Length: 356
Image (tube, rainbow, N blue to C red):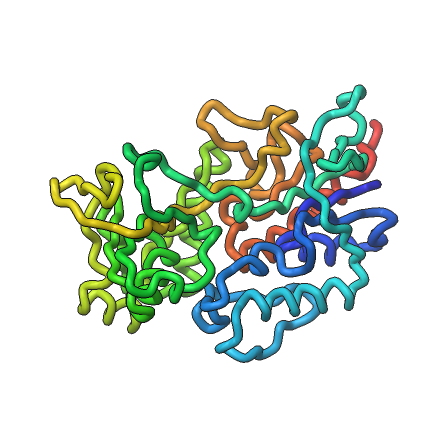
């Protein structure tokens, strides 16, 4: 196989489109492997109350516009339908479900990479595009007392519906947009909420325009080209002061109690010495890059990240590997662009080096 793509989310499908457009045949010259049971990538797992109009902007995949879906339909349904239509339209022949367990170098270090699935299937790749994103690796931070808390604990990854918490005392931990959205939904559903952030929420009235986006991308790329792990999204973007968020601040729902010191069996202790009783804790603490299957390649730098080249998709330590959905390409717009860049870079890597 000339190219193997791992992941059929925004970035993986974009890469597949550009490989196909340049003459590689799906299922013959390249293959797309996906761990999910159906189309939609990470979006298929989002909670139903996250409607399309409330989700982060979803950018069109190349060659087939999304159109104008019902803004009140769950984003998970919209995206799963769109991605499924996209796969069929371009006959991408995604193989699923395939959980990739490892990627390794074969006996010949200059030969194809070996992609091995958890069920024993394997593929040999002249070039590999890794588009596994972050959804499968939720980040649970360590806090004292977490194991002793007797109530319910769950992560953004496991959230389904705010009405599940009606009448409960709920602590939301995290300073990103997911935390803010959860707090508003939980309050509307009749929960009594408390918000904990390590630092004061980073509210910003800055316009999220093209110039702003370029600045965010440059800051993220500066870290990944230095071999440092990407920071959280909100640390780069801030929280937009939208109308609903302004109302939440005014009502007190979106006012942080400050850093969490520890969990207690029936509540929480904060850094200012105050306590509160709780029924549930929702950890809206983000995700990390799902790249454990790449561990045999030994890509980590001393700084803890994977060093990316200036094009933001090529991996310095392994010239046959291209990563999308990592760093700046974790956004939907960045993922679409990175898919194209990775496809073109993969094709260049397959070309023979001129002699003389």
